[in-house]
Image (cartoon, rainbow, N blue to C red):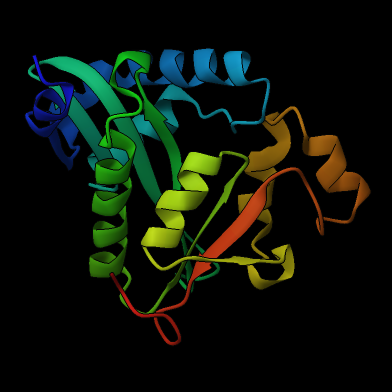
Length: 187
């Protein structure tokens, strides 16, 4: 079987209440990936992920009924900034372009819901940096990202949070990336 065709058959869509049964699987997948990578992934509660789905601010990828991937959208700083966060792809679907499809759908949802907002993300992963670059994001210093304290509080569960704190929220192992609709051309 051609794996590229198999990934093309995976449904990537906006999640809503009908997908709440996947919340524990999503969180377990994120947690397992963080342990394997040894890098930071901000932990979210089941209620938080459920709320994202109920608000139509989450993207889910399914292979039939089998969970394959996820990402969610959150606005910050009075909707001036939007983050596409929590990107996760199940191991067996990695390296086949699924993360790119999920990120693109989250990007489209962000542009639709918040057309004037700057879209940003923090990542330590080269693959995510490449995807973000293809979507028009540019690497930036943390000072160009939201100053919303609630966003940065989400970093507390990351293993690298001490670095962020010690540097006065100026540096970390993550790379900040930003898409500014006023300056950048959409793909």
